[in-house]
Image (cartoon, rainbow, N blue to C red; front, side, top):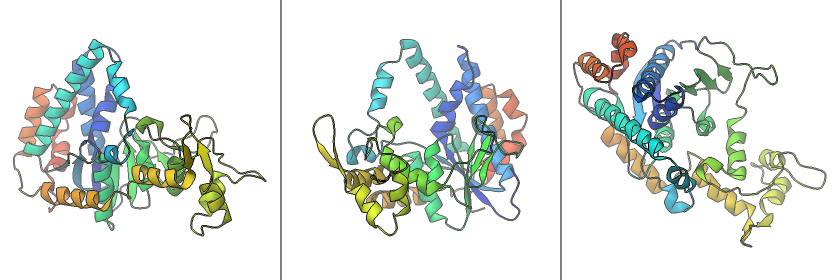
Length: 335
C-alpha cells in the first residue's frame, strides 16, 4: 500500500467482523492464544492502514438488532439454526470471545479518542456506509473481511482485510507488500470487478449468508437468442428498455406455489442489500447516532491506558508498538 500524501483517510472498522473472524486464524483449544490473536489482528490491522493510508480518525462500528428484520422477516433467520447446533464447548468458547469483545468495546469507549458507533436497530454496515455518505470528499478505508462492502468501493473508498492482509480497491487487490495478488487459477491479478454489477448481481441472486432469497432463481448471467440474461438487464438498467423490462417483468412460482414478479423481489432485495438505500427514518436515526456519539471530549493518557489494557490481556507483541497504536487511539475527530 502506498501512502497518499496530503490526503487524510477515515479508518472505518467493522469491529465484530474483524474480531470474530480472527478466531479462525489460530487452531487448537488454547483460548488465551485465540483471543490474543483476535486483539492482535484488530489493533495491527488498524495500525497498518493508519500508517499506509495517512489516517485522520478511527471509527469503530458495532452491531445492533437490524431494522432489516422488520422489513423482511427471514433476514438472518438461518443463523439461529447455526447457533442452536453448536456444542456446549463451542457455546462456551463464544461466551469467552464475547466477554473479550465487551472488554475491547469498553476500553475504546472510555479510554481512547476513537469514535464508537452503535444503535439498537442498525448494523455496522449501515454506519460505515452512512459515514462515507456524510463525508463525500474524504478518503475512507473500511477494515473488514466482508465482501458486502465491495459495492461501496470507488477512487475514495478502499477496503483492508486484516485476516488475509489484502488491500481491496477498484484498481486491484494488493498484499501487504503492495504487490498485486495473483489468482492461482488464472495466473492473472485478482480484481473485484465493477461494484455496480456486484450489487446488481447480489440483488438478483440473493445472499444465502443473510438468508435473503433470490429475486429470480435460476437466472443466467449471459442471455441467449431467446432469453434475456442478467448482464443484458444490467446494461439496460439506465434506459429501462426492452432487455430490462423483459427480464424484470418475468414471473416465477416458489415451492409453496406463491407467484413472484422479479422486479418486486429485486426492489425488496435492493432495500436489504444496497447499503445506500436505507429507509429515510433509518438514515435519520444513523445521522442522529453519529452526531451524538462522535468523540468530542478529548481524553488524555491514552498510551498509559493502552499499556494497562495490553497487560491485562497479555498482549506482549502488541505492546511493543504501543507508541504507534497510541497515535491513532489518541486522534480525536476534530483534531
